[in-house]
Structures are given as C-alpha cells and as structure tokens.
Image 1 (cartoon, one colour):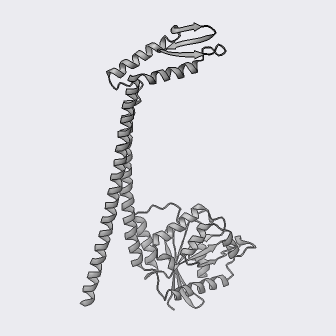
Image 2 (cartoon, rainbow, N blue to C red):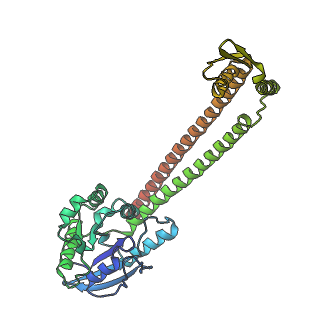
Length: 365
C-alpha cells in the first residue's frame, strides 16, 4: 500500500501535536500544556511505522467561532495540499471528558467545512484516554449526549482512543493504523481530493452570499420599520399630540375641567357625590375622596366623549395602516429571497451543463 496520508483536526488544546508525535514515534511537532495553543501554521512530517510510510499534517487549533472568509478557505487548501494528492483520513480529535457546546460547535463546523463527503474519510480520535479511568470507551459513549453520537454517525461510527501520556504503548498506534487501513480498503483506496474541497467551497460561498444578502435585507427592513415606528410615535405619543385643531381644543377643555374637579363636589345625605367633567361618581361615606376611583371614572367619562372616540378611531386606523405596510415589506423580502434562490439554482445548473459539455468535447478530441 502507498503511504497513508493523515490530517489532524480539532479545537485548540485537543492534543493534535501530541497525537501526531505519538503516531510518528518522534517529536516533529512542538507541544505545550493543553490550555495553550502552539501550532499557528500547518506542518507535515513523515515516518515509517510498522512497515508503512505515513505522513501526518498538524493543523492550527479551531475555535468554536471561525471567520469563514477567503483567507480561511486558502489556509484549509494549504492543509490539503501538504497531503497531496489528498488525505486518506481526517482524524477529528476530541478529548475525553465533558463534551461541551464548544466541542460540539467545533466538530460540526469542521465536518461542514469539508463537505458532506468528508464523513466518509473521517475518524474520531479520542485523546486523554487516561481520563477514562475504570470505564471502557463504549461505556463512556453510552453516557454521552446525543450530539456526540450524531457526530459519530456522520463518521460512520469510526473512532479510536489515544493516551499520549503512555508513549511506550505502541499497541494503540498499531491498532489505529489498522483501523485506518481498513477504512481505506472500504473506500477502495480512494481519498479526499482537492476537487471535493473546491466543490464545497463553491457551495459555502453561495451560502455566505445568500446570508449576506439576507442580512442586508433584514437590516434594511428593520431600519424602515424603526423609522416608521418613530414617525408614528412622534405623531401619536407626543406629550401634547395635535392631530387636528379639534383634538387640541378638546385636550385643553379636559385640562381645565380636571383642575377644578374638587370645586364641583356636592354632598348629598351620607354619601359623597362628585360631579367630574359632567360624570356623577358615588363614593361611600366609609371611603371618602378615593382618588383612584375618581380618576378611573373620569377616564371612563372622557372615553365616552364623541370627540375623544373619534381621535381614538383615527389612531387605530393609523396603526392598521402601519401593520399593513410592515406585512407588505415582509412579503416583498420573501419574494426577493425566493427569486435569488431560483437564480442561484439556475446558475449552478448552467455551470454543470457547461462542464459536462466541455468534458464531452475533451473526450471526443
């Protein structure tokens, strides 16, 4: 068999460099405590192990948040180029222990970046195997969460355990190589290629472009909605709203009536009777001059005024118009997004047809 080409992937501190050294039986990759990140650039080293030539590419640690841009795409392309013509296996390193949300995000992102076919060429390598203590790896996996099990499903349930502290234990290296060779045999000697990655890059760029357009459209819609809301608020919620001269006169009259409400008080028998803004309010002698009740019934009287009711109706109509405008904008956004998706789909279809046509011409020549 030709040399086995291996690429190590994982979050910062997962033990990629240590695992690479253990696998190669030498120390080409610089290591440090797991809390520190040493590898800033990808590097490759080769060795002969159990009669097989192997090449290992050590990569920088991923964080749970990666800036997905052209620079990052180029860096990943360099990782694949170091294992030219392509890696037989991606070893996705996950440390034994509590599988946190950060580990989940990182693992899912790694698999997403290399595309849907990457799972066929990926094996999970659990590091810090000594942390299992009395447990077996199967017992550990049974106790773990559903997200880890889903990741293993994508990798076709391929996994291995490494204890980098036990560097004299060559058996763990031999077993890993046997598992990798079995995977390569199952894949009929095929490996992950640059073309697979380029196809994934095209899909990712299309996704980023859609997300960028959607973000800009959402921001424009939110800006328009905020401007409309501010305008509506200025018109309806001002300390002294002036919808028209009639409304302004009504407010002034109500203020004058409110300022003289206690002067309009009349006492009748054992009950207190208030006349406020033309509305009679009965208050028990046991609870005289209840301000809350006075205000509540005063408000009730105001709402019965036909001029006030007219003003309220005007505001309701304005609110309905605003809600209708917002709904129309949302419908426009959905329509534009659907058009963009159709255009992108059509573009991909034309590119595929052009590629097939070119290949057909090349083969005929």
